[in-house]
Image (cartoon, rainbow over all chains, first blue to last red; front, side, top):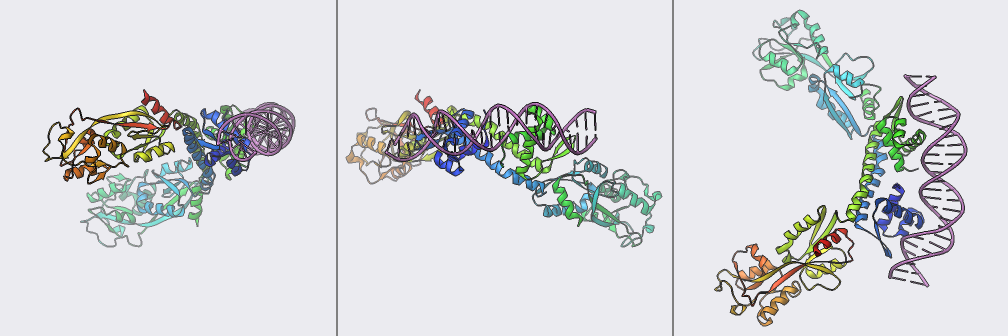
Length: 287
Length: 287
DNA sequence: GGCGGTTACGTAAGGCGTAAGAATT
DNA sequence: AATTCTTACGCCTTACGTAACCGCC
C-alpha cells in the first residue's frame, strides 16, 4: 500500500478542520472518501494520526509531525510548476560564464552587472579558462557563454562586448613620453604567448614585426608582462583597460594614430545550447 | 488535470536514467505508462521537461528545476512515516514544561537534563506559571508537565521530584548564629503570599503561628523576600536550595531538628494527555 | 533495420457517491 | 435523538499491459 497526494490533501484538510464533515465540504467530496483516505494514510504510516473524540477529531503528536511533512510536500508541489516555467523562460536558473584572465580585467565586472540586470534571478557560475578551452567547453555545453577574443571558430554565435586600443607600457624612467610612434621604440618587446593569447600575439606581431617581437620572454599573463617591463626587459603593448590596474613602476604611452590598433572581446555561445537563460541573454545581446 | 506521485516517480526515474526503457525497467513497468506519465507531467507543468534526442532523452533547464522539487517531495514522503512513528513513540516531538519561579531555582536545571537524558530528541518548551495556572494549563493540555508544590488536585498524576528542608534567612549582622530554634527568633517573618505560594505559606504559618507570621509584607517572589530580609524587615524561612543564590547581605541558619520541616516539589501531569513524549517520560518517572 | 519513444485498445483495479450502520453525547 | 464517523455496495474513472506504429541513426 502506498500514499497518494489525494490522501495527503484529505489528511491536511481533516487536520485543519478537526472535522471530517467540514473537511469534506471544503474539498467538495462526501465524508466516506475522507474516512477511507485517512484510514489508508494511518495504515501506511503505521500509527494513528487522529484521536476520534466523538464530536470531531484531534491530531495526535504523530499527526502533528505528519501534517508538517504533508504541508511541505504540498507547498513544494504547488510552486514546482511555476518555478519550472520560470526556468524554461530563462528567468531563473544558472548561467555558466567563462572568461580569460587577460580579458576579464577590462569587462568582467561590467558584464556581470549587465547580465544581472538583464536576467534578474539567474545565478552565474564563473570559470576562468584560456580561449582554447573555452571553445571546447562552449561546444560541450559545460559552459554557457564565454568572453573570448577572436578568432571565433565556426559554429558559434557571438557579439562584440568591448573594444579598446592598445597602449605602450614602459618603465617609469623610460625616455619616451606622450604620444609615441612604434618606430621610435628601440627596446625589445615583451610578447604574448602564441598559445595562451593567440589573438594578442598575432596582432602585436603584425604591428611590430616578428623580428623585434621575439624577445627574452614570452608571457601570457599580463601581470607577468608588466613585471618584466618594470624590470627593464623591454616594453609591451597592452589593452588600455590594463592602465586601471595601476601597476607601480610602469607607465603608459599613447600610440600615434597611424599605429593605433584596437582589440576586441566577444561574448560567445553555442546556438545548440538549450539553457533558456542563455537564450534569453543572447536575444537581448544581439540587439 | 493534476499531478500524481506515480507520475513524479516516473519523471525522476526517466530523468536519472535519461532513457525511458531503462527507467521502465527500474520501476518494473513497461514503457508506455512512462510515456503517458511524462506527457501528463509536462502538460500539468506547462513546459517541456525533456529534449527527445533520438537516442535517449535529456533534461531541459525547466526539467532540472522540476527534478529538484520532485526529489525533495519524494524524500520528504520517504521519511515522513518514520518521523511520525518516532513522534508516536515519544522519541521525538515537544514537551511543554511549566514551573513556578520559586520552585524552579532548586531543580529546573537538573530536571531539564534529566528529561533530556531520558527523552533524547524531544525538545522542551518552557513556561513559568504560578501553581494555580499550572493545574489549569495541565488540565487543558496547554502544558504537558508541571513542577508544582502540593497540594495536587485530584485527577492528576505526579511523582516527587525534590525534597529539601527549610532554613532561616537572616540579615548578615543578625545576632543569631549556627543552628537555631524558631523560639529564639524575635523578629517578624517575611511571609509567602497565600495566593501565589499557598503551600509555603501554609507550612510556614503552621511552623511559626499566624500571629508572628503576619508581617509588614507578604511576598511570593523569593528574591523580593530576601531583599526585605536584607533591609531588616525581618527574617524568613526559605528552601535550602535558595542558599545557592548567594544573595549579598543575607545569611542562613540551620533550624533545630525539632523545628525542621521539608518542602517538596512534584512533577505533575494529566493522565488524559495524549502526548507520547509525556507518556514516555511519565513511565520512566514513576519507577 | 534496429533502437527508442508514442499511440490504440482491452482489461483490471481503485476511488467516488449513495445508503445504511455504529458510537458517543 | 442528534451528531459524527464508519462500513457496504454499485458505478465510473483511471492506469496498466499488449500490440501495433512512427522517427531517427
